Image (cartoon, rainbow, N blue to C red; front, side, top):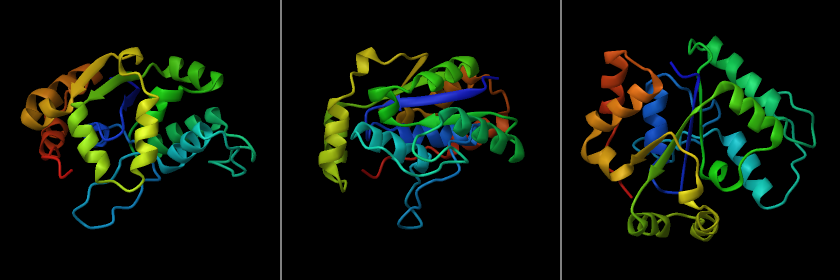
Length: 205
């Protein structure tokens, strides 16, 4: 099995759905998820602390806070990654981890992070969706201007990827697309694969 999965793509392209599938397949996406605002709303499946750092770094801000024991004043990705792996082991995921976020594609990671990511060799998954559907979805979101600005910085063609998951195909043929993803990750547990397929639902926006 692959040790890690990295999910990228434009904002509102369907990355949350693919991240949820990966989580069910055994790749925890982070322990600090944003809370849903209603019981039937889906989680973003994105580590809130990592997302905050990426967003504020993109805005050129320095973050004077500590993360997972990192030294205050800067983001220690090495410490963060080690903490994520340790937490994964404690939770029974055997060190497997996942990352999701459009800004990972737009801005990359600092040098120490790049070296560590190369060492754990994540499966790089690019999630795509039609531009018209992305625009419609963004129009329904709070902070639409920020999402559009982030998307403007993302060159999908330049994103390194091992696997492309078209969101429309995932919704239309979940068994096939989840099967492709599971095969790429090296997941063979039929129960986990079946549960992941069952988590794919039609988009509400």
